[in-house]
Image (cartoon, rainbow, N blue to C red; front, side):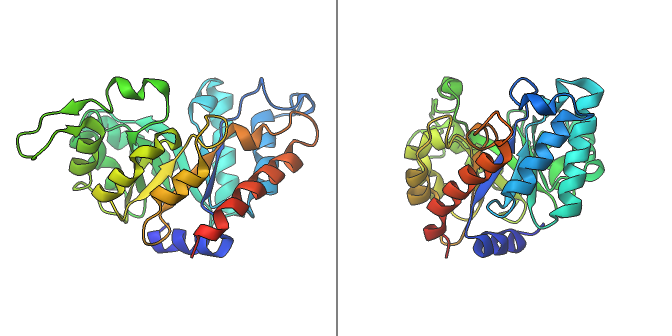
Length: 276
């Protein structure tokens, strides 16, 4: 999916919503647990109920890996269903991969070619040769971890660095943004910036004004949607704002899909005034 196609979908739906499919067997409604594939049945119902309000779905791979072969089969059925029934919706493999070059190449083949996700989240810690193999897959996106929303993010990501080439110190996440933006382009690279780090968005936009940002942490993690929209939006639509638990677990009863639809609709309504 191209940048232009993704932006057109944002404008048509007046939404920047991304729904995280962090599907946990312990949290899905009991009546689904006796079905042949509870993970897929839950995902399918959520997707069918919310697709009008969202422009992206983001399965968190750990929630499928945890169940072994059956979990991978559920993941494959989910991405196949999305690609078949809703091909205009952007898909993200939230895998957070990143290893030496030949290993990264295999990850890229597995998620971007075999499973046919539009994008994959990648950790930048091992440097350019661990990221560039993902960028070699034509028509696909890398979503690089920059500034995350977890409490431990400050352990490293906001560490101040004395860089001799710069007039003042920069934080580690700023260096990640500055250097990695040369590896790809706004046409094939996005960045993860947590919603709970909204105070940094203005500075981030000064470094990467055009790139898409994937912003998790709205909802259950306490991120402020209005601050994200105010400080994170570029000159054109270039945000994907993720909500997972707040939507997919809006109810644990038989009305779970209906309640998910309401939660997604509510978030989309808050976004639409910012989409031009």
